[in-house]
Length: 247
Ligand SMILES: NC(=O)c1ccc[n+]([C@@H]2O[C@H](COP(=O)([O-])OP(=O)(O)OC[C@H]3O[C@@H](n4cnc5c(N)ncnc54)[C@H](O)[C@@H]3O)[C@@H](O)[C@H]2O)c1
Image 1 (cartoon, rainbow, N blue to C red):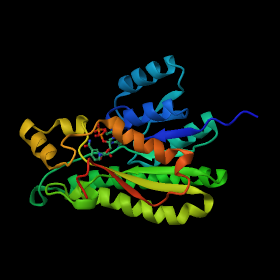
Image 2 (cartoon, rainbow, N blue to C red):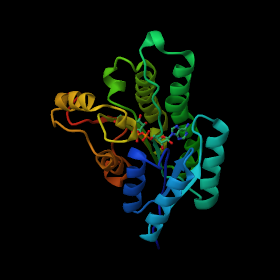
Image 3 (tube, helix red, strand yellow):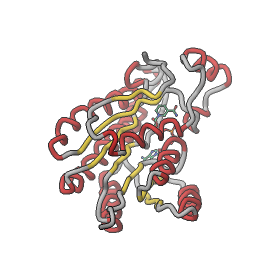
């Protein structure tokens, strides 16, 4: 009998770390659904080039901060593929400023996208995963969720929240063989960190024991491990992918 091809969903899969995760899971043999929010052309270009290599990659539009949009996206995947084996909660935003300048809107936007978005996606995939009696949820937090960071009270709170979400959900879903783990990336070269100037980049790199930023692919490798059968006895864990920064 032919083995069932597993299905993975990667939020925010059209650039940066999410794009690297989409590519890696496609290489690992998953049918991959990435989500895009506002750049369909980039999403189409990625799926076309991967499909041309014989990989099965599709993009759907989803705003993770909207319960309705999340449910529609999950329903679309279930209609097309009949199952969801892996959810990677990768999509996220920053609106950095010091507390005294941070508006309520800055707080709400970041918490609603990063933390509530992850909650909504977990809730929407939990039912099909529970029926399958298997699943993997991988939350992309951040090193600042472990250590905090001046100028990021909204972002770091959302990322600390994802760690709590991971550990609580890992306990709730373990009996259904659904494993929930978390990755805390450090300084990764993407559009999100492109805003930094040369001095800021050097200051960051100098503090990292490995003395360099990571490539998005180095985060995707750890996602691949959590999505793979090799991690069958690992749940509720947070792995820092940070070049040793948070030891
Ligand atoms: N780059 C880093 O150094 C770094 C470090 C630690 C953690 N992270 C985390 O890794 C993840 C990816 O970061 P990145 O650097 O690739 O960022 P990025 O800004 O390049 O990509 C973020 C993605 O999220 C999507 N997104 C944003 N809001 C959305 C919404 N409401 N609905 C759906 N999609 C939405 C964007 O469209 C984009 O595709 C984020 O959660 C980020 O917080 C990044």
